[in-house]
Image 1 (spheres, one colour):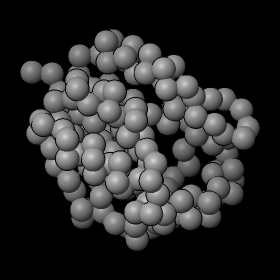
Image 2 (cartoon, rainbow, N blue to C red):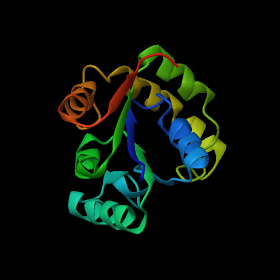
Image 3 (cartoon, rainbow, N blue to C red):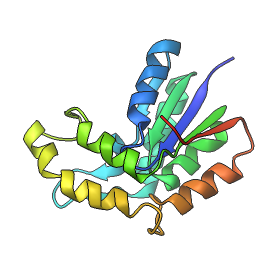
Length: 159
């Protein structure tokens, strides 16, 4: 049987780490939604939802087994009907902040380690707002996505 897994949670929750591990262990294609959620340019702005949806559906059609990860409840809702499993990483804000501080350089997101470090304070402030926000990146949106998924699912609160 094909494995099709979605992983989501706050920034710093461990989504990319877990997705990479599952991808390697089970030979799953790996899609980090950060790579298609944002339009090129500065200041950053979200791509049109339809454009991102097209790319997501191309990915899921090209791969029988996959793991898709990100914090975008709107994009995850597009792929959740095709997921055989859902994992909600919810270790708490303090753990997410620790992970953000220890995060290795992500060259697919930042041009240099310095550019990533220059963004750290903004990222930590954003992580702290997880339970307070009311957008597609929020705890509320993630909880709704998790609660309405009818397949096998896990919420991981400790790492």
